[in-house]
Image (cartoon, rainbow, N blue to C red; front, side, top):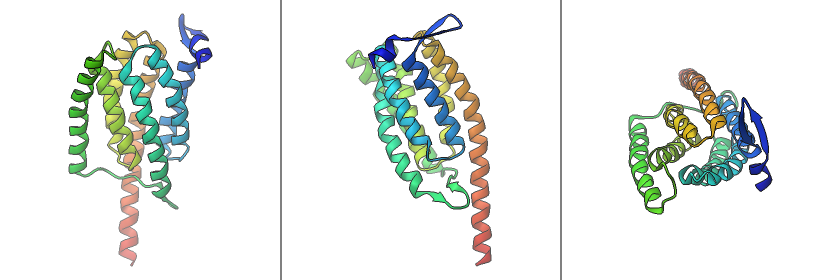
Length: 212
């Protein structure tokens, strides 16, 4: 891994390690694959987590590094869950969350961010504990919601992107910041796609129920 961290390329005058380049390309591919609800989303995500853990750890971003470990575990769960939720017609079944589920997501994001930020401060694990914590917790909430097929996970990703871009720039990770902007565009498209799929699945269920 040291080789990937200390060797890289220069893009528009900015040096980028191989680990950061490959990790962010993998992460970008994950968003693209998630839009299409393919099971390949999860193994590609596993590869991204390994690479990005090393990048963020070397940049002394404890929250961002720690979240990669959590993402790895959630990715294994998501892989298992999507295998169980595949429909022969609609693929991976997605739906809009109930109001109670949305409230739980919001509470987990808010309370989790406070707890994580205080932990990072106590451990001196990050020079930017609050945005670092928000990205960490937001990522976990997004992946957990994605794993059970909730459309709202795309909205959480937009919040994470909005926080992540300035943090990446301040950390000198300009390529990663640019990737976050691309993420935002893909997230908006993914949100529209999943909303359409959720409506189609509901309409299909109603049609089947009416035919019985």
